[in-house]
Image 1: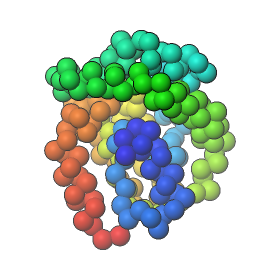
Image 2: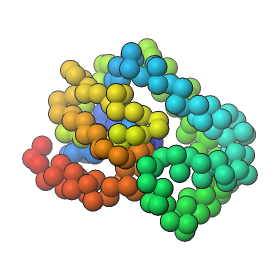
Image 3: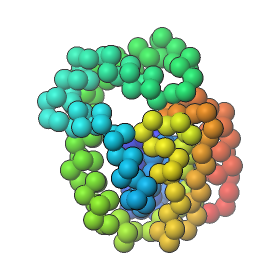
Length: 190
């Protein structure tokens, strides 16, 4: 899973571990971040404050395609990764009314529910038993490597791999490395 998909994947692994044998998370922290490392980086989430606002988030996604392009470009080290066709497909998709509403709702739900759970330590009662690898880009504009830590006593088998000279869209910049990592992880016995 990548970004929000990775966050959802962590919840799946925690809530129904029997359904997941191994888990590869890209460009997302686990539910037990070190607050002393995360809080100084919170300024990086400035754009989510716009997306989570009722009506504003969806209008921004639907009517300001430059905003989506900006985030996509900012998310990679090598901007040639985004072909014009790929970029326009992401922009077109985010402008669809249902997808724009979903993007707004996703950001708002995280702000209203998950941030409070992170701050109050509600995830500390949960344990990750699924063998997991988190991969992050060394130059991720949202989650820098210092935020991607081990989970300590909250995980049985979690490894963090930082990829040099990559940003937030690791699967786009280094699909070969992501595929090799997935192959190694998924072939390991549980």
